[in-house]
Length: 428
Figure 1 (cartoon, rainbow, N blue to C red):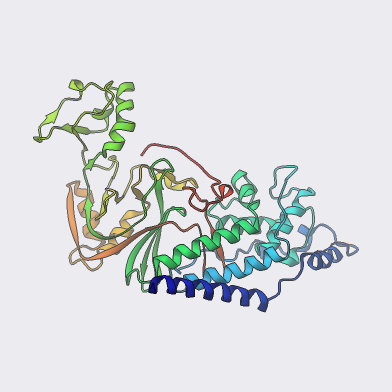
Figure 2 (cartoon, rainbow, N blue to C red):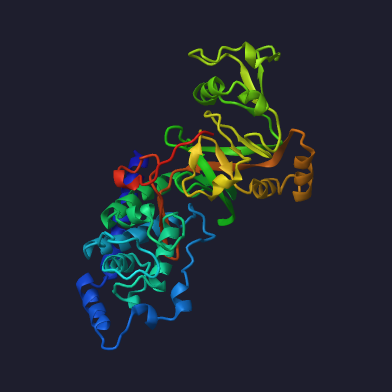
């Protein structure tokens, strides 16, 4: 009963705050703004817009990254402030869709750039003084990069397929997305620990947080939609350097069985050994790889830089048998679509995270970690102070400086199909 009452009070307070904020600050009507811009555009002798603005100033980017964690103590209030802004945007007609006649990139002069400028001005990515014209100048290029950074897209400065899709998600849908994620953030609470690790699945990155500030932010690779990374709360208790990899049953059935039918040397080439329930090694040639079910054997890959987990495995208790780890395929971290694993989380620059996790464990500084990895011997290390670990699903959030970030709803949990903009497949 008390929980229900608290939730009701919380909802009423949230609505009251947003309503008050929406009434306190009035967004200029789009028609009035357009009229002022039109007057500026029609000034005699104006010339082209890209000739009127200082190139260095127009390329200046508002910082999108922040050392504030996604789940800072102020996270709910930050999202509510963003919701108030998006309510004002919707009350003023939202933003226009962009339908380009030509590829939109720097140097293009086309009427469809007007739609793009209007769209970026309304969302706050393009300064209003940049005006409305047909020119894709350096102001527009900078604004597109800022928009891309806020949406987790490649900061190319031109309109690619995913940028166009993100631009054309309506302001009403974005407002609903913020509302959905406010509920998630409130339900998670703010007591995550003085030091903790957070993996935000839709953003595909990992934050190491200490004293409510991000100490490290590492790019990650998370589960594909067909094999999603689970939501969980646990504690990191162990790091294994040079870990052997025991292949999960699901990967044996779905991936290794078909691979062995195509290439009988796959296991040997990848240094994966088979063991029976007595610990005796089994020759792969004695297994029927055309059988419907995988053999009841343990598949274990030898440690090494080319193993599936490379230098590091980070363990935490959970019923899903997932963990965080290194990978030999470092180039995958450069991809925007980083939804490729079978549920576990691969971490870029994982040794930096190792150092941070072991900072309170005597004898395990950076030099010791590097020496241990170089030795190539599997070495488990227990953390002196286990570190809380949280896997969360946050597709929209904001920081105290008012920069709102959105990510694709890769697992289709937000309830709006237009938010699942990017899909990918792959094998872990």
